[in-house]
Structures are given as structure tokens and as C-alpha cells.
Image (cartoon, rainbow over all chains, first blue to last red; front, side, top):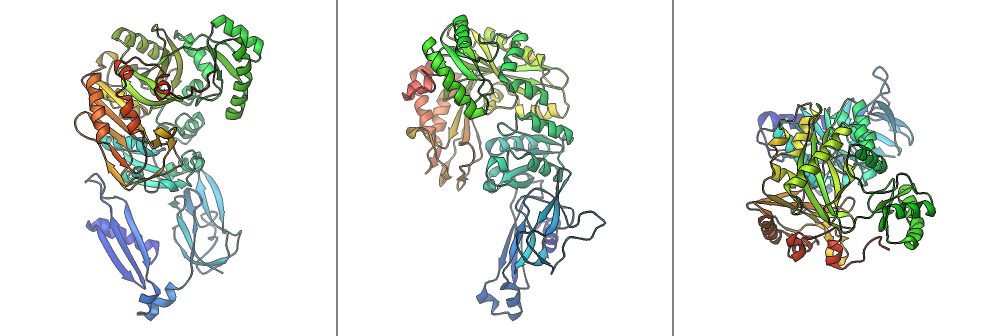
Length: 151
Length: 453
């Protein structure tokens, strides 16, 4: 389950006025719970996301799930606030793609802040499992951008 | 009116601003450091952006991070609160160049009043009395003695780039003046990177009286009366009240007119405070001007009925002040106690930690501006102010009675706070009579005076 699907679930909740939603899929259980804000009119209170990877013991019950949960992963997080870009310019190809192996020092994305384009480099060697932010989406400090399997 | 504002601050003042925005129908964006992830201002805002690691330089003082957060959330204005970037003219300039409205005065206002010697000279030109002193930096002991003889002992040596009580020495004669000059210069160099000092007459046993002013972008400036902030410890305010027990209508009118005149002199915009020292013969002198909303603004709000934060936002959005000077009435009396997470019996040592038990005061005449909640972990990276307890009564005695009642209801455990200190203060006969000076707290606690020779 990736961030895009989670965002779709959040929209689903908002559209239908749901307060809590729990879905289990492919060995991962996700529970989304709305914190009610002070104003009744506001329907966009902050949403709490709890992602639980089902433990080894539970995974034994479903063999297909086992492969996905035993992979060790590391997140590359945004070192600054700004706008995330996958390529140096709109016409250029993205710096990296899913399944690509990256090296330490390799530029993996751009974060634009105050009209300055900052090249963000990987500090580790690994394989990109998932890209967690869409192109030209805002990121905050510490927000996970890439899910990497260290090599 | 703005549709979205970013609050470049934290704690109780961030909450205060968010509340004003809510009432004005403005959407809010909070910024927070990683240490403030569970803070109330983050939860109350419509959107929240993490901008950096805990230290202020990485977060609340990090201009690129804050501007970047403002850009990605598409806000129209930034409210800087107090402290942090609120009096940083460079930040105000950057906001201007990014077409984001800085809710406060102009960069020029901030720059002018930030240099203490220029502020003195400017206000003197506007006709405000200033403390007699050197007209330029004092470079050596000959100049120091000449100045001191001219203005009369006792004198106070102050750092020109100074603040926070550093680089200050009080001298009663030539001998101590000579030795203090060198130590003051050294301390100024160490604290501010600038050894320049100047000399002022030392006003003995002064009271600290400040006037709140409010100005719109069309040249209308009014004053909202005074606050008495004489209760201080090491130049930090602990308790403030409005009106002052020693300011009568005549003196208020005089101080107010001068404050407005000073603000007009520099074409001031938004909320600001002009600080005066009042000596024992009711002579007053301009001390400095603060170009921001202040911590103690609630006492003025309660006695005038005017919401200062909303006024700041309205003025920044281009609205005219909807009241004239004659419309402003000072009614009743208000007192504010600053509650800090400090152990007052142990030299006011800061006490961060988790709040396990919390019982908040309430009832008539009680206002509480705070960001704490049961289970909240007070972090050690920022100041120790955890709550402002403000009471309002028909007169000073009633406000004091309500404050005593409210402080006794206010229960925080296990961390230590200054609540017991305030209870002790409110029983003191000199305080109750209103016969105090800025030395009062240190005398009450029988502490060593700071910087006195």
C-alpha cells in the first residue's frame, strides 16, 4: 500500500464523513482515525495514520505475505521544507526510478525552497523500493521521500 | 482580509494567534520543530509543517525553512508573535520581497528602534524626556568620569548593542566607575561581539511603566494606557498589571500623548510598546521601544476591551482602526502572573519534564493563556514560560483576590513551577500597597543584586 492509496482512503473518509477506517491488504494493516477539531464546520481535521507491519508469527498464516514483511527498509527523509521534484527540469527524465540501485552521493531528487533548487543526495547504497512523494508535492522537514532496501 | 496566515512561533502565543484567526475566519498554518510535534499549537492549527530539528536556530529562527513553509502552504501573511523573529528586520524584509505580509511594523521601524542609542536620540527629538547620559560611545576612563560628573552619580554603564541584562554595571563613584568600565566592555564584547558602552544616569528604585500603542497604515495612532511591569527578577518580568497603582489620569494622559508622539515621529505601524522609567519623584524617562506584541498584552486587553492580536491582523490587512483615542476607556484592573517551569526555591532553576497532574483554574474574572495539557512533556529547548494567568476585577484589590484564589486552584505536578512564588508575592504588604521598585523581588528573596558594585 503506497501513499497514493492512503490519500485516496483519506478522501474517501472525508467524502463520506467517516471518522475511522481500517483496511488489511497484502500483509499490511492500516488504521486511519480522525481527530475531531474544535470547529464543527471544519471537516479537514488532522488525520492520524498508524501503519502496522504484521509480525512474523502472524505472517506464517499467510505465506504470500511473508516475502513482503521480512525485507529490511530504510527511509530517506526530507532534510528541509520545500517542493519535491523528481527531475532537474520539467522536460528532463527523473533522477531515479523504482527498483533502481543508488550509490552514496548520488542525486536522487530536488527540493525547491525560496526559488532555490537544492539537490538532495543519498547517503546510503541501496535499491529504491518505493517513491513516497509525488512530483511537485510539498514536503516538510523529516518527511519520508524514498523507501530504500540497503545493500 | 487574509484567508490564510502562518504563525512563526510556538507555545502559548502561537495558540493565542490561532484563536484570533479562528474568530476572524482565517485559516492557520503552524510550524514546529521535531521537539514540538505534540504541542497544542500544532493540533489546533488547520495545517502544520515540521520545519527542523529542536534547536531554535534549526527551526523557529530558521528563516529559509519558515519562508519555504509559507510558500508551500500558500499563506498571505506571517505573524511572528514575540521573541524569535518578531524584531528581526531582515526577516521582515524577506517577507516583503516574497510578497508575504509581515504582521507587525515596517523593517525600518524595527531597525531604528533596535539600536538603543539611535532610539534614544530619535525619541528625544520627538520631545520625550530621556535618561541623562553620554551622547556617544564612552571610549576611556577620562570620558567616563567626565560624563559621570556631568550627569551625577549613581550612573549605569550599558552595552550599546546590548540586551538581556548583560554588559550592565551600576557605579556610585569614580573608583568603581573606572574598574567597572573595563569589565563592562569585556562582558559586552563576549555577549554581543561589540565592546561599545554608553553611560546613563542610574534612576534609583525606579518603576517600569510601559504604554501600549496601536497604529494603522493611515497614520492613526492611539495609546491603550499603561502597564506596570516593576516586578522583575534579573531584568525578567514576572508580574504585570494595568492600570498602574501609581499612575493617575493626568500622568496617563501625559505618557500616552508622548508615546503617540514618539510613534508618529517614526511613522510606526501595528502594535508597539514604549517603555518608561518612573523615579520616586514621578519624573519619567524614555527607556526603549519594543516593536512587537508583548507577552503581557492580555492585561491591556482586559481593561480596554480591545483584542490586540485581532487589531494587528486587521491593520496588516489594510483596515483602519475603528476607534479614536476618546473611545478608549480604562475600566477595572487586571493582573498577569507569568507561570514558569522553574524551581523558585532553588534559584529559579528550569524544570522541564512531563505534566502528570494538571488542574486548571477557572471561574469569573479568570483568563488562562497556556499551551500545556495533562500528559504534555515540557521540552528543555525553549523558554520556561508555561502559562499566563490573568485575572480581572472591578479594582486592584478584587483582581488580587481573584488571582490568589486562582493560583490556589492551579495544580501542576510533579514539575516545579513559580506558582508558590506568586502566592508569596501576593501576600507581601509592600506589593499590596503598591510601594515597589524594580529591586523589590530581589529584596523580597534576599538575593545578591546583579551587577551592582
